[in-house]
Each structure stands twice: as structure tokens, then as C-alpha cells.
Length: 155
Image (tube, rainbow, N blue to C red; front, top):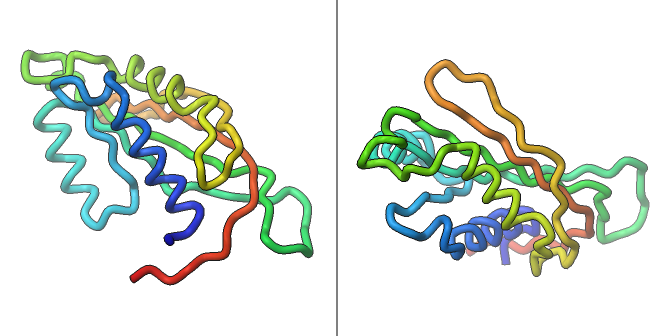
């Protein structure tokens, strides 16, 4: 078993990919940030259909120090970036779905979802545009809290 946080990330990718909104043709690809060569993959997708979703590595923090185990975090944050090349995405070869709509879909499908690894539902914090010279980027922030399991070595 992988770490709790990487499992959360992969479960979120799987959840979004299972939704008709993302898997209808043309497919809106959802990637996990920690892939080995994500920059090349993102550039390829941006050039092909004009849009991609990237689920970042989850962040966890505890607001007050704790002595007990397993560690319980008051905030586990899952941030998804939607990167859109407007010219390609809204052309005939693109997805035709604007980045703002994809951001709303991410918020819709992740908010209220209780990932098996944590058991606590994700809440929505924000959908925000991110300044970029080349692309339209939206960042969707969901969060929850919970304990992490004992990590095991990956094989």
C-alpha cells in the first residue's frame, strides 16, 4: 500500500476519470502531479485537445501539536489545476469545454466525496483563476481532515 496522501491523490484521479463529463469524447485527461514526466504529458495534451486537469500532491497540516499516533491532520488539502489553451480547446479538435466549466465539474465531483483512504468528505474552499501568460488556469481547492495510516514500502 502506498502512502495515505498518494492514495488520496490516485483515488481522486480515478473518481474524476470515471465521470461522464471527463470520459466523453474527447476525453479530458486527469493526471496526478507526481508522474515522472508530467511537463511533457501536459504539453502534449494542451497541444492536442487544449485542456488538462492536474491533481497536485496533497498537503497536510495540523494546527495544534499532537503526541499521539497515528497522526491526525486538521487539514488535508487537494488542489487541482485546470490548464486550458483557449485557441486549441475551443477549436474543432478541442474539448469545447471552457476551463471555468471544467473547474466547476472538478468541484462538483470532489465536494462531498469521502475517499475510502480517509473516510471524511472533501469540502470545497475555492475556485480561483491563476495568472499565466500562455494559458487560462483555474485552481480548485478541496480539503478535509483525518488520520493517516502507517506507510508501507512500495514494491
